[in-house]
Image (tube, rainbow, N blue to C red):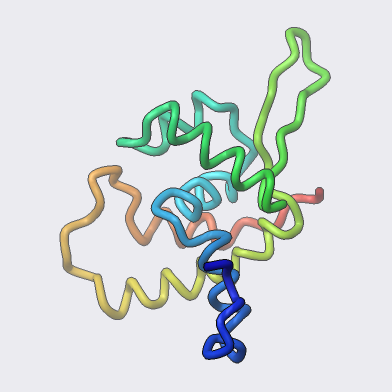
Length: 133
């Protein structure tokens, strides 16, 4: 079934479409890690324990295809390829704030993720001004 094609889902089509676009296990984690600054592939991989190179590559490609991130080559010598958020990706900052608020209400006191990226780190990222794209 194509997202948003069911007549019973007409009124929630934007929700369904959004979930298909950013709702997989890694998409928001990758986006979250790019909110602070652009990152190279290996920097992202180091920030996200448990993600394989193959899965990271697949998710980066999908996020690029959906216009959430873009791949930029720097003018530095030697050249570096970095991933940055697009305006569309930056617009997820408010969603991340809502996820943080939800987590504070419902998950505070529960076991933190193995990555150690708790609410304090999310809060720090959410207060960083959006990058100019």
